[in-house]
Image 1: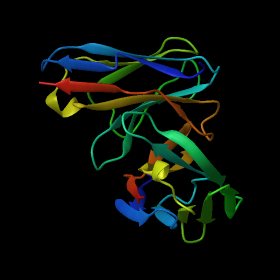
Image 2 (image 1 turned 180 degrees about the horizontal axis):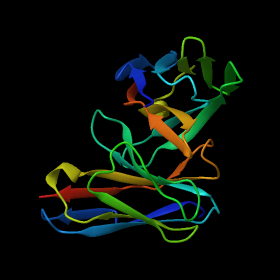
Image 3 (image 1 turned 135 degrees about the vertical axis):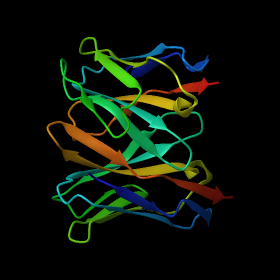
Length: 113
Length: 112
């Protein structure tokens, strides 16, 4: 089945710096790659997603890139702010009679003021 | 507010007890999911329902059962709780399987 690996598990950056989180997936049939942000005590919230027919997508300070050949995708956050501090999850979705989404283990991002 | 509602928010069970976690969404979504979240392991899929009337196993279905009661509601049942089922449980829904999910706020379950 699908497996998603996420790195790093913890990331600490200075306010204003950029943060990059990387994921790899195993099943080449995966075609949808969402990213979620989870704040303490809350459920994950979708922040950006990308489909397999697109290489890059940007939304203000966040961007996601996808390399289907290498089965890699990454989240880039520029000009980080303290409110970006949270746990970020990548995920890969594929169809197996119904769609299943498999999540990475998460990256805890700390943005120091 | 539109979204996914989970009840209860907190629960403590004794080993062997049973309980049902409730989930309801008001966004007319077709697909619903149950995940468990454990430290360092991310979110693992327990069961999902691609559409009303269907349910399928995810990665970690053992010890759980589900019911898609109608399009809005998807419940998760623990028949005989075990300490290994101590976790935070999230329900989610999506319009279609390959769209982003809307998550509930979670149920923190402790089995002693």
